[in-house]
Image 1: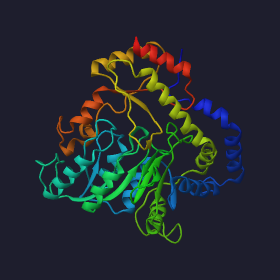
Image 2: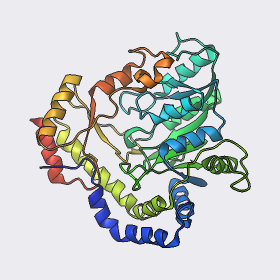
Image 3: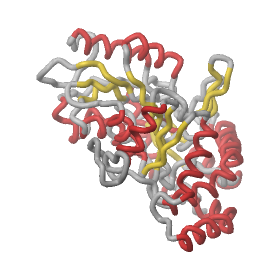
Image 4: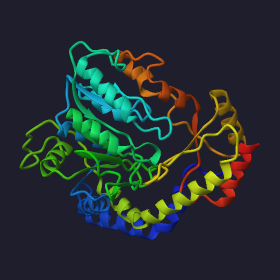
Length: 390
């Protein structure tokens, strides 16, 4: 049996008529840049997430870059990031001349640990690495912002993280690149991903729970001034017209054709989130009795969109054996993420040593992901479980 890791073909078969209709309309209009579908999508995205504004952009990385630029992050600023995430989270910090300060993760949710964040902020404030490991720096850093990541489709602990941020005057940029559609019961209400912090960011890379047919992303905010800044940064710091440049910016626009695809996919998105819950539940039932596996945990009150279904093996050697065995039986696997950011060569100048982020390092050595998408059949999941059990 051959099983796709992510099944975009089955999804397309469901919505082919609508996607083709939307794309044909764009082709006939010739409005390839900032066409009407972009503003239509932004309105629907904001309504879905419960924010006042959404700003479409060219990628999830551009969304993070635009957010930090709009918030004035730059040299001398410390921005707190988890090391167990995709490169982009801390990359945009460094590209703007600010300094990533890595904060270890919770061993159960894999999201930023609020207690470690509290320690890291105190360490920067006191310039004391005895409190928490700090990056190499020549001048004293100023705590500026925190970028919690909603990893694998699960919202971070915003109740605790926002409390720490408020106590220390930190700006919050939510990195919801993997979690569009995730929810949490908080303060008597249901809050969606992309509704936290001054600005929230997501990605519409094709493999995401809501993905387009290329690169795409969005920023979300309730602040009218930040909306204006985001829209300006998105197009070379544009002012009153496109040849008035009032600040530095980027080419961060979302293509109209990608917006057209996302509009079609939004029509079935809630159903796909529900199907992901069924797939995850079936995995839990099938894999729960297999020794040596640690399955994903979703805390009470939260709904994960399971961008990945990630399992921990008992050791690195056990993971290697399992992945080899699965591959021989036609089951694709992947590792998110084999090397935490604080140990990546790109961040060697920060001087973090092995062992400085012990939870992230332990998880990275054992974690691997198996197929996960709304159209995964019970038969395929049973086959995966049989292979893992054997």
